[in-house]
Image 1: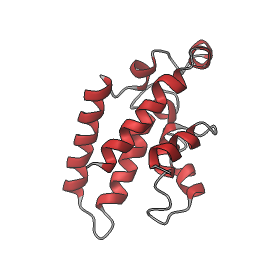
Image 2: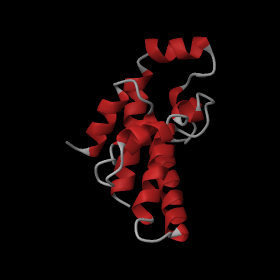
Image 3: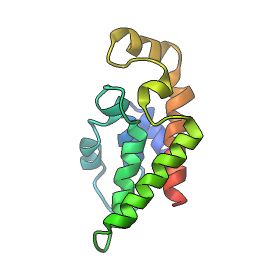
Image 4: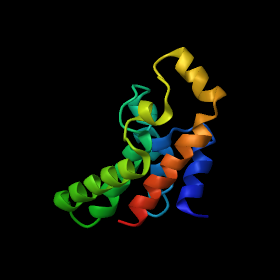
Length: 139
């Protein structure tokens, strides 16, 4: 199963986008999924439903940290790949901000209701998760 499929399946089992992305890499980096899910639990909905940076990006940045610092800390490579992830995500989606991506305010009950009723999770969030994993895999 592809990492994006694993992540989307995880996302559709009531975990957030950041948890879904980082969880898809648990086996590759020999890390405990439950601890990764705890680590990433605050990053969904643009960081705790505050409409900030997309949680899928946050999860992807955690993966880049694992990917580029496995033998020794390599801050410069990690930062360069961070910029690449951000730039490529914006190129594909027009923004990196959750609220702008999904078009609703998750800080309100009305926004949460609209998110569910309009199927935004399926239409927008799954694509964002797949995009982040594609960018990470090809960087």
